[in-house]
Length: 391
Image 1 (cartoon, rainbow, N blue to C red):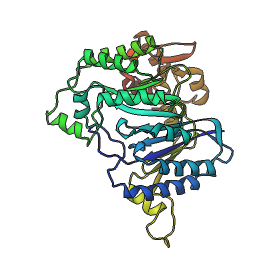
Image 2 (tube, rainbow, N blue to C red):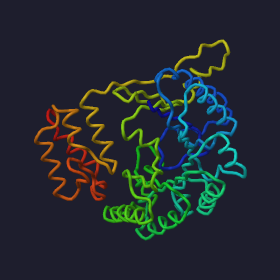
Image 3 (cartoon, rainbow, N blue to C red):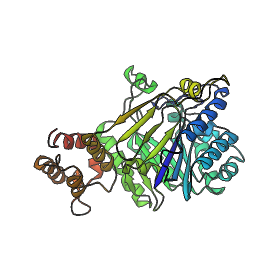
Image 4 (spheres, one colour):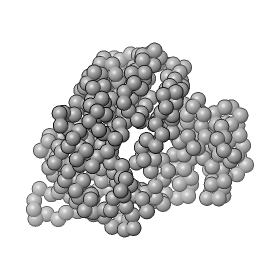
């Protein structure tokens, strides 16, 4: 059985104004205990899936490129000693352009990391400053070219659109510049104003320009879908675009309901059936349990919460995850797996969205979102959920 492993690296040199992922600006001195703790947790989970082998390993964050090479090497060595790795294992490291230095790529490749996801976010220095990124647009583009020229097999970049005051033309120019770079994967996200983030407070205080209106955002998204397809990187998920055979295999495990283990503070795990587990988002608590300061203290599992999903929750998750993918949902699968929930009201609602042009049928019995439907995917999914029998 294939298994995926996620390592959450919470360290950041500074916080981006839009980010609500668990991160900390704790000093580098915490990294030594963090690495020890991660290695302990990796070993704790080694027998969770005894007949499995790792198909993907993903260092996410936070900013994984804040780790030193010897720290990454220690974690990867522990992984290799605890698990069987598939021959073509995908090993991804999220990185910021300002963390890349001469010799960095050579060392990275020597560790077996074969995919870099670079947090570019914008190719405009003014916007980079607004969202509190530390690199420049020129630096980001140069780093992408460096990764490519020095042999990183797969390069992905992240972009954000619908930034405060951003025009359609500005986004179109940013996208064109990004698509000229030697990348094989693009993740593009509409800016969302998450609670308790700096940019949300700025928006509420009207100290930054307003967001583009809904029509401009719609045009931005439609242009994104059209231009990536024209450049040989068609959409395969709401926010993800890739060249053939260059999809993120790790993220695809999440979307298709495969099993994965998450280690690190705030990391999530799923057994592939119905049990989810989430570590508490606290670095201090995490290291106190797994890498206690006293050598005499017991090593304990980190604080976590566990949830067992019932059939309705599993069905809702299937709808949410699969309607994000261009493959869509299969009505036969739904009827066989959840016959008590799939009644005439649900099928009628599917047909209504089909007639409205929000859904289409790539194959008989399969329903997928059109690009304009993806813009209102939350609404469509909530309407389909409300149409389930017994809901």
